[in-house]
Image (cartoon, rainbow, N blue to C red; front, side, top):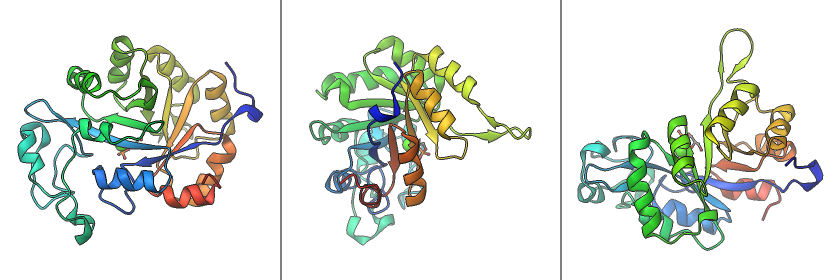
Length: 257
Ligand code: G3P
Ligand code: CA
């Protein structure tokens, strides 16, 4: 159903990896700070441990966020829990651990949203469903996002009631056209039965692009927007949501507080 411009809501602000400008990304501290700053939602990245737990961390290993380097898929949860992924962001955050997805879901306040980015292939999905069945979050609070189209396709087969967004960036194929183009994106979203798109913050996302997706009934989330003029542009375009490392500044600048 097409959304007329006058019917469009203001974008919701999603804290990318939590309030990650201020606190160590993908920790409970960063997610808690996002709620304090007034974010409507949080975004987290997930991987699976060797012993089958799902943890929130962006990379497939801990080397960027810890002094100790562990490969998540080759480590047990207890080993990951022992390491400090907070100190790199400042002494205040010393000792902050990698959270499980269970812990993060349990921390989402009623009525708020969580975007869960699956960073692996679809083999994680069975364990993912077990977490969802264990933690009684409301279905409408959860959106699943992934670059891997097969993850989105499988998720919509298994759990069609969950919102799922396919992620894409844009590349120039040297013909002065950005790829994927609007038609390719729309075809992909329809084929996957996705609820919408997670698009890179990019000049390819213009009024024609946003209008066409909304007209086709898709939501559109933009990542990652920290510049306030860029945020105002997306507000004017009428996107569904904006992911930012700095929810505090965007909420203030866009008058969403
Ligand atoms: O929301 C999508 C966005 O988070 C993808 O980029 O690298 O920050 O996970 P990345
Ligand atoms: Ca992410």
